[in-house]
Amino acid sequence: MVASKIVMASLSLTHRRALTCAATASAAYPARLVPHPPDLIKWVRKEGGFVHQAVKIAQQHDETIGLGLVASEDIPKGSDLIALPHHIPLSFEFDHPVLSNLARKVPEELWAMKLGLKLLQERAKVGSFWWPYISNLPETYSIPIFFPGEDIRNLQYAPLLHQMLAIFFYQVNKRCRFLLDFDREVRHALENLKLDDHPFGGQNVDASSLGWAMSAVSSRAFRLHGKKLLDGTHNNVPMMLPLIDMCNHSFNPNSQIVQEQDAGNLKILVVAETAIKQNDPLVLNYGCLNNDLFLLDYGFVIPSNPYDCIELKYDGALLDAASMAAGISSPNFSAPALWQKEVLSQLNLEGEASILKVSLGGPELVEGRLLAALRVLLASDMETVHKHDLNALKSLSAEAPLGIANEVAAFRTIIALCVIALGHFPTKIMDDESLLKQGVSGSTELAIQFRMQKKSLIIDVMRNLTRRVKSLSSKGATAQG
Image (cartoon, rainbow, N blue to C red):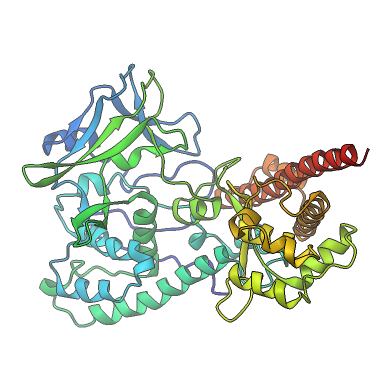
């Protein structure tokens, strides 16, 4: 595994504070880049933007969230809250050949680093137009690429169920490896450059500063509609939106971002989606994401996240063990019949192009492909299975399409799978709660919260399916009576 903690070195950017980028030492929100940065609201207004008189920057009630935007008085629904003219957002439009060449070496999935290069350039530039914004950015970010190795282990999220590297850890390691490799690319590109040709004003840029920039962008940038394409769609353009990016997240937002054209130029607004009461925070929906993505990109975990899930590897031998543990006789998962293999192929769970990652939790509760596979493999009658559309077999709302006994067996197998998953966590939720009460570092707290939410999710799936089993068993008993 790639080292999860980048060696932290300072980035001395002329008259700026030295940049360090490590997980915060406590749960408190990290300091901003300078002790007393310029007033961001005044700057936006000075540059021709609009900020509603009731919108203020303030510490949130939950101190771990830090600063955010709040309403100092009641704001009616439909009110314009913030408007940014086209020249205020920060996007990656490079006018420097060295940065352009470096940006081309960044994989598209790590787009945050492209915009991060522009952010670092502006931070290094004395008198940058965006300095009033940049100086208000956090000095550190509590995301996993900056976790100590111990806290990566504290996540405890790669139970043996997966049998291959969990997607979450893969992404953490991929980003760490990229930063170390890209650090060498940047150093090589900056070698022997004259000061006038240096995109960072002669300042040293290392893995630490690159990590800070990528974290700042991934946690704050918005992907907005760009130019209209020939097919009528728009390309996505990542932008950093000063002040707007201080709106925190909620799945029940009271604000929304709107794009408008003003005399041919882009104008970005935040509008009150609902009436906002005095002292309420202004919140946007960052997306229907699971906690893996929230932690990876934003550095926080959502309790009881309705979109959270656990990812498992579809494995016949493991499912055999789970069904036997559940008391299901003659499981057939590791040696399916030919007709069952054909159905598995249609579900992309069999064959060379198979996608074996399946999930539990989230809106589906049980991923449709997994549910259909269990129903089919626990069935003995090929004709009965072929009478049903594949979508019906994948749907949890399609109650017992292959009969009550088949449905109960499928649910009991998943419940047993959940028991196995819980058994591979080295701690229980009560142990985690006890650790949090003792007081831990910010990154350790995040790691513990993350694994607690995964365990709670598994337990919720078990409870939901147990209720369904009881209901089905009751119906079966009534039918027999």
